[in-house]
Amino acid sequence: MTRTTTRLGGVAAAAVLCVGLVACQSGGDEPGGPEASPSASPSASASPSPSVEPSEAAIAERAAEAEQRYQEYRQITDRHRIEGTPAFPELFDERGLLGEPEVWDAVAESDEFWADEGLKQIGKTRIASIKVTGYDGDPLSDGISGHRVKFAVCLDNSDIDIVREDGTSAVKKGQPRRTIVKVVMQGQEDGTWTANKFTTTDKVC
Image 1 (cartoon, rainbow, N blue to C red):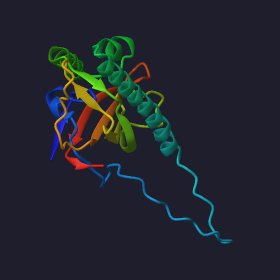
Image 2: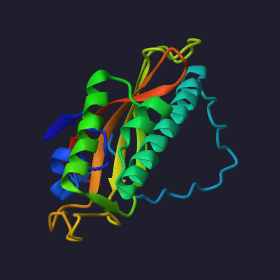
Image 3: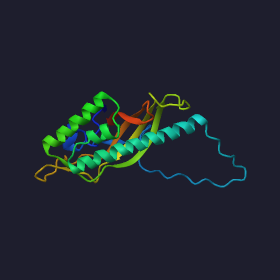
Image 4: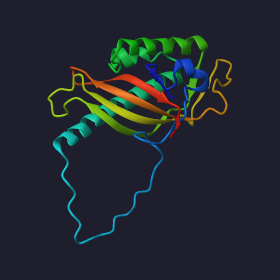
């Protein structure tokens, strides 16, 4: 089962009592735990590695730029949740990280929810793994406007607690602590990448 959300906080406001920690599981294009890679046996007749296609290299470069912006989004959101301050002004006004009107509204509503409930976050979200699952647009074009990079991200909330003003935990006991999120970052005319869509899944990673 999946659900789509533009609630871009590390902990969605609607699911804060369980820290937004939907379960996630590896499989398909979703990141899983570390896997050992087999050692290659040396061979005199081994063929040279094939060269990387220009389009593949361009996708890798642009995906790295989009990932860096996503990492920035995560760091800013965590910091504001820990400090108990609204994330929207920095995410939108200062850093231009939010790409769609519904995303702006969702982040503002999430800020309001945390403030109304008197919630603060203890600890930081860790990105356990992140994998590019798709690229929309011509990677060899000069600009990135309208291009989209799709990621499958495994978020590890094992070190996080969310507390009320009286110090009690708002985290639901027994809730899975690792969350898979499918992220879409979109290119803008000014050459930056913005967060446009998150989809959470009930799978363990």
